[in-house]
Length: 584
Image (cartoon, rainbow, N blue to C red; front, side, top):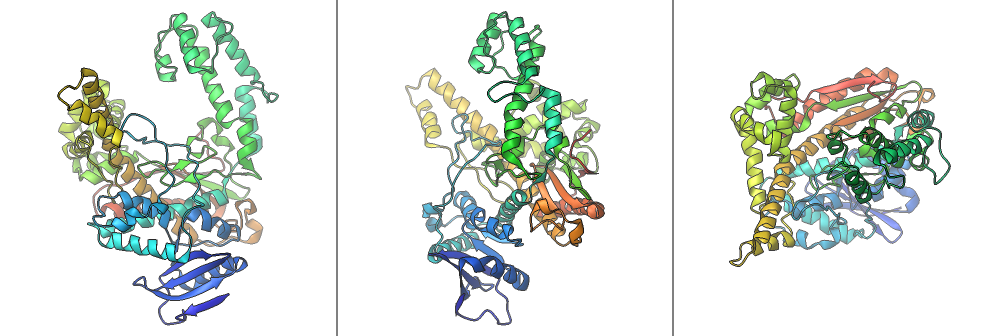
């Protein structure tokens, strides 16, 4: 280990420590409150964990590195946690697109820092809003001292010169905290009882089949479906072939979704829906999944922060964001420990109320079920109508039942509805919208603009005009929800980060009461074990469970104040302390 430049033993501890690589060595550059270099430490590979642990204890700096997924796992494996970091990869992805960043040509030209592209699919100009399985590698990100220092400087300059540095700093801090949490969730794992999972599968599907064979109950149901179709060779796992078989049997469905199939009366519907449910369970979370993803009493999925364009997380293996309800009983705390499960009630409508400053919608939500509050204000007549109308307004379902109810919402909650309507109008016209803290949607693709341009030509065909209108509406629906879903993701990150800090401040338990399967960083203290957009599960020693529940509630209130100040709105939690995560 060698040190150069200015000593770090002065009166002011370093505010940042920038980590980079020089060959096999790790370079730790200590920087002051102005971001200026103070000193440099060169570490051998075997010295990093111990040095970082000591620096974290002595100074509590903000660690700066190119990619949390590269730097943090080895530290956690050594039992070392850090409180704060700047993930340059994730921060670059925000800053290069944010409309709040007005003059940063060098940052936008630094293409080596672009995160791996994600195929969004969907209609022209309408990126996906929901979860994707994302597999990407960032091994080629710059890691040399000069490259990392240059990007750090570019990002600081971009934020300082932006139209709203305070909000952007908060967003970058929350995003980087999310990167730490994602790695901690994987390191600690979600407590998982293999025997319970196996029992649930056997109850639902029958005994575990031989490799390559379907479970007995699925095979039995498949026979019933084929009998009802009058086709003993019907393929049930091919969407187009199944549709053709349904049409021949007199079921004119346009898709095989359970919602559409449930609208038809035919002997095939009941066994087919049950078969599809079993097939989904078997393929997504059956015995093969159990063998691959659950080891030594823990399910350790790979989370991808900002894996969705709105900033929502995605999953890169394991399907953490599609955990089926029927298997939640397999999520079981270790002996002497408990699970604290916290769900946020109606997160996105509450976020919309706060963003828009709609006091009427905030009043409908305060201290109660928001949808019931909407009914009490006379906007609609039933809770089901309130849910359909609000979700439709946020997700762009402005026809059918949602469209019928939307005028009532506009009269009752004009500010909230005006905000999403304006976001849709901007999107329709090819404009860009941003979340509360400054994450901006990507500009329309060249293909989208070409579609619109062709429709505006004097000789445009009716087909071209129709396609342009459709793609404009698709983008409008996307931007309408982008601002709400993205801001809800920001609130959730603030909640997670605050709760994480509160858990870290709690006392550790005696070694005899430890949960060693959670790894050296978490075996003796409460820790986050699962996250799903608006739900958190904390694995905690039983003696601290009540304290953890209070912390979850206080962290939610803190996140609301951090983002929305003193706006009169709460984010109530449904809290449970249990040995298992099922909701029975």
